[in-house]
Structures are given as structure tokens and as C-alpha cells.
Image 1 (cartoon, rainbow, N blue to C red):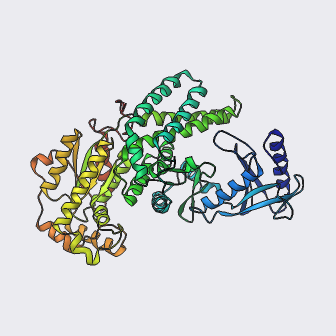
Image 2: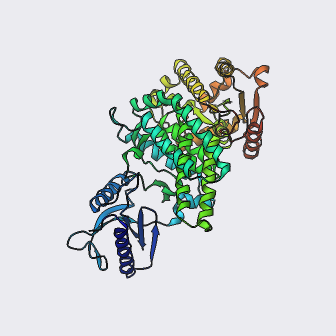
Image 3: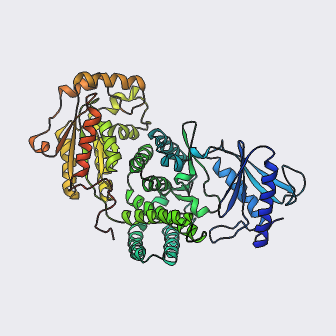
Length: 543
């Protein structure tokens, strides 16, 4: 039996070398090593062995602990990646002549996995410029469904409490303060410590309420881009946290925040915004976005700490040290940026069904980094329907004047919460009534944020053609067809001269749409009053 100690690790290293030689009989073997495990890959299979180590955040020091955590890793990762996680194997025999699936007492345990191409990892796909919007949508939908079905934290456990979050953040910030040697970073860390102290106190009631309302669940816990891959066109999250309940039982927004943050640090703010919006749209969790900014900072600090610790493990003049230093600085800069106040703005769409409003809104969201709320989605959510469910017999109820008024009221409530949390909001609805637009203009004045109308136009023939195509595909939340368009054209309130002063017109006709959208969106996002796409980078402090 191999136990923790320098001698135990040395024996494990001999065991790994022996397994390497044995597995070579089946084909070329690749060996991957981290500070807590080895992974041997041969042909289509991988064998992961946990190191006999004991850190402040995990204890793999005993054989029994390694067996238990292998079984936990298998069970937990089968929730999201059952095709990758196959079995836990006992390694028998001796250190020099080990056997997989042999007889006799176990000397070690290995997690048996299906191997995958490293190029499938999102960290690699981003670097190669290959990560596509469809993959982002797949992850958003899978994580939203996963979070809905995951067990919720109980009221008497410590997970997701203000006290636990405070201890976690203090540990990270303490490590950064101790290990960061560059004098230029000292003020950044001091500002982050001050920000965290103030912001945590401000959000404590929200943390308590979200735990009470079952938003703290058994999640993934480590959802950065190197732990996500694309298999057969579907996003698959793997390698979740198995060694710490406290790092896995977290607020669902904390869980998805890791991937959102990592995409933006990797230079894909557009995909980060798309992921966040698709996830929020799937679950409707718009009411507490003030905690999301906190979690984005916390997640960046986690990665900052990881790369800082890796820097301590390699020579100071090595390429690995320099690479980890660059990554550490990128995450630290992100955390500092997101600890600043945002640039909230209320932007409403305007146009008939089929005019291209949602296409333009999506472009704005991805370039500007806003949060989008959609009338078609919220209307159905209020009546217990999935966004792409057809209204059918519910049609008269869903699209009655009372239902429409209730939908706009819901959008108004969400818009207020979103801008008060420091986020820009895009309200994706037709806004064909003057009173509907006036409500949001008043809200902007109350919240003292800019107000914009994006007026999207297309010919009647184009709109009818789009509606026919959309109905045939059956993938869009909107149920509007030719009859709805006809009613809209017959009865609507055109923009007033005063509203036109707050409006930007976009022609979405085929052929001109892409260029017009790019130009108009670029214009909106470069307005000095609104600020650039990096809306987390204002000069005013939250604290």
C-alpha cells in the first residue's frame, strides 16, 4: 500500500513508470502530470492516478482516500460526461510489476476514462480560432438543465453562506498578497482586498437569500475552458471538483461565472456575453446579477492564484514561469477591471415581427456585453412554456392585451434589477405602443442611465418571408406569423419626434443587414456616454 510522504510519492513515480512500460505494449503512451495526479493515455483510453499528497484544500494521503475520491470523481463526472468516465480500476501486483484488473490486494487505484483529442478542449479551440457560437449555446443549455436538476443545498449546511464565501476569498487574497513579488501588483491587491471587504458586506443578504431560494446547488465547481471540450458537436464539461464539497456546492451563478470569465480573459468577450445570455435566458435568473459581478472577480482571482502557485514550482528563468506569469497578470487585470462600476444603459428594440430585431439585439449583446431580456421568452415562461414550445391552444391567452401588459411589466422589473446591478440591458420586444416605450424611458430617468431605441426596419415582403421560414424551422421563441404582422402594421404608434432623437435606425434587409448592423452597433458601443464593450472597466469604484 502506497501512503503519503516523499517515499510514497517516489514509489508512485516508480509505479507510473512501470505502467508506462506495460501500456506501451498496446501502443504509444502519453503522460500528463499535474500537482495532484498523473494521467497515462494509450489509444482510446486514459488512466488517472491521484498523487499521495496532502494540501490545505485536499487530502489524498492514504490509499483509502484515493480510492474514495476516485469513486467520487467517477460518480460526479458521469453527471455531465458519462461517455468519458468508465470505471475505477484496482492496480494490483507490485510497484515494479503492476497489473490492471489483476488479482490480489490493491496497491493503488486508477480512474479509467475514455481518451479524447486535446484539440477538442475549449482552451485549444479558442487559441486556434475554432470555437463556434453553436458550441457556446450547447454549453449554456446543458449547464442550465444540469443546474435545474442538481440537488439544492440544505439550509443548515455551510455551503454558499456569506461566511464560507468570505473565508474562500480571504484565503485567495492572502495567498496573492504573500506571493506576488512585483511591486506594481501590490496596489492592485490592496484595492481588491478593500473592494472585497465592502462588496461582500453589501451582498451578504443576497447570498443568504439565494441559498434560501435554492440557488446553491451541487455544481461542477471548476468550469474553466481547459475543463470543457466539444464531442460530436456538443459541449461537454468534465473534471469537476470531487475533493471538496465546499468548492462544488456553490451558487449556480458562481458555477457559470467561471466559464464566462475564462472566455473573456481568453479574448472572446463576444462568446462570453453569448454564453451568459443563453444561460440566463434558459433559467430566467435575472434578479440577482449584482452577485454575478462578485463571482466573476472571485473566479478570476482563483485562476490568478493557480498560475501564481505554478510559478513557484518551476525555475524563474523557464518559459513555463514566464507563461504562467502572463496568465496570472491577465486574470489579475480582469479581477481589477470587474471590481469597478459598470456602464449601465437601457436599450430597447423597436420593430415589427420579422424585422430582424432579435438578430440585431444579439449582435449588440455580443459586441457591447449587455444582458438581453426577450418578450417572447418571458411571455412563455410566465405561462409555464419552454421558449420554443408552440403556443397552440394557449395562443389567445398568451397574446391577449392583459398578457402583453403583464409581459412588459415583467421586462420592466427585470430591466430595473439589471441596471441597478450595474449591467447594460437590451430589451428585445416589439415596443409598438408609445406607452410601452415611455415606461422604459421613465425607468432610465429614474435610474439616471442613458436610454436608446434601436429602430429595426425591413420591407413587408421580407418580414413575411422571414416569418414563414421561421415558422417552418420551429426553433424561435416567437409564434408571430402573417396574421400578427398584419395586425401590427394596421395598428401601431410610430416613434414620436422626441423618441426619434433617442433612436438609431437599422435597415436589416438581406444583403445590407450584416454591414448595417456592424456599423450601427459599432456606433452605439463607441458613444462616449455609453462607453466601450468593456463595461466592467469604468473608473468609479463600487466600494
